[in-house]
Image 1 (cartoon, one colour):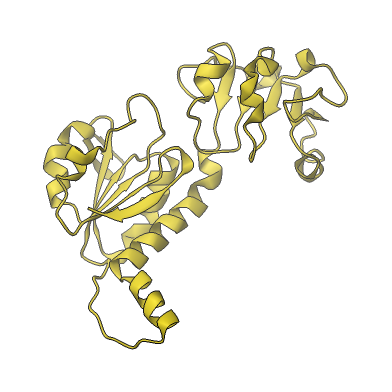
Image 2 (cartoon, helix red, strand yellow):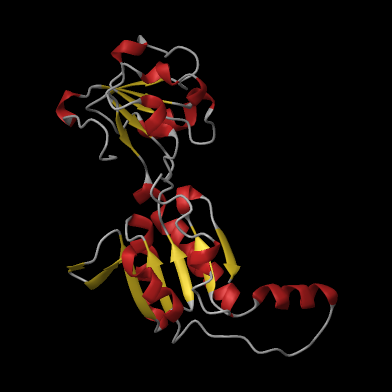
Length: 244
């Protein structure tokens, strides 16, 4: 749950709404401690009144309900199906507990990150273009091994990326909001990025989009990277990968 929102005791939650029939059919039989109802957060729930719902699961592919966030004002907990939650806390206010689904998407997102890193280092785009054009021309590319990788954000997704990078014989620098030590060793703080970025070959940014993280990596910050460095961002569940 996001820290700026209310916390709730799970023992007090009894009625959960699910936004689509397929999801309802998949999990309602497993949730024997709950009463499950259908509700897409737009119309009216099927089987009870809005004020009877304790947990509302938001639709995954639609944010139309956010045009009228008052629909969840009586809900105790709003569960998102997405990793990102930008814009939601401000709309629903502090009285509704909010949970995102970063841990659900961590493995899949980390796989994409790793795949893009390998493709970028090995110039896969060039190889695919040459193949499509029927051109055979040798070129050199860089290995992921021995690269200096900086991962900013060590939550579910950042940690999943790190776990998948370790077998590639890379030097990993973990960066979080503040420096500390944990069971895996040193975590450096974002206030050290001026020193870290010039010694980074691959930069992975796995941060939620918030007021603090918005524009954290602007042109001036990215200019601190070496000229041939790669960077990728996974803020708010959208991504890109580019060379500096």
